[in-house]
Image (cartoon, rainbow over the protein chains, first blue to last red):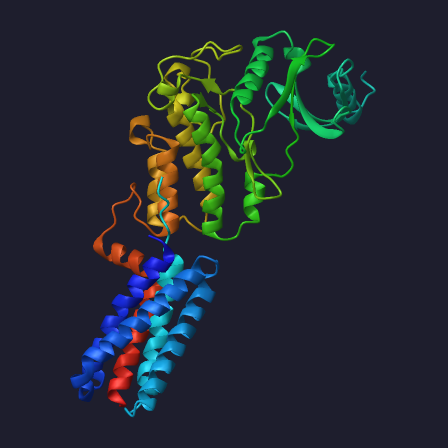
Length: 119
Length: 316
């Protein structure tokens, strides 16, 4: 499987679980959980695809983890700002810190993923 | 003669032993290695303006079967085209009647010396895997080396590994190289069945008892196991999977060894990658430990994520 595809799928799957975790960390968000999960999934997919694209051009695991964390942090920050702009209470650290770590996980997994060549 | 000292006698012996390169395109420079059947000299190739190595049979062995074996070695090497094997440029007979062959001049260090500069166990194992590659290739071409030891393995300045001294190599059919051998091929200078050839301490038991006919590629597997033991000591001597790999490679019974060099390489690679090795059956705790060790970064990140979630939940 190619790295961008792998990153995209892994980012999406982890995004779903990350979104669902809001039910535990912030139960008051339950009425809007579908939107949170959708947003988190899209964030994960974009993060994974970006990391996968970079992983095909870079050969440094450490950089991959750092870049993954940075992308996760930045995208989670964008979502927080969008929340604020739409009049919802923003959850900066509650979204950005886990988002950064998820980005690092996707970065690590994608950079260590070996693409299998079709004979 | 009684008035001559040892140094003078050695010098005289060297002068007498010097090969006569007249009629060739090479100029003798200096002796660089001494083997059982010949001496290797550094020489200058006038036509191509480069250094080469010339292996010349010792003068007292010029008319023996050893001379044929030297030619046989050159023919074997010429058949094997691999980056881990020294290419032969020319073979022939000198004006003084001695057989010789010309090969690339190998620069570097013998394995045991080179290994001193390789500090970590993974690096040593990666170096070891480079040795296995040309041997596996030779076996696939029906050739077994029979004298593998650190002194016959050179590590070049770029980390390349070259397997040298195929003087007692044996040609078997490729089918036999992949399974037990039954006969010795009729190469020039082929070893007499029953003769003990090789280096004690590195040669397989079946080779040491002189059963030349019964020796097959698994004798090389044995020697490679001994080399692995010397290479990983003392850093890796506590690693049970590595100890098991060595034990399987150096089993007294050839049938209990790895079936081929490829299987040995697969196990060493598996150990390097943190995967289970075929030679060692690990228990559940060892399996978990290996999994954690192999995926420690990923596990650390997942734990960090969960801890983050718990902290955010507590301090919300």
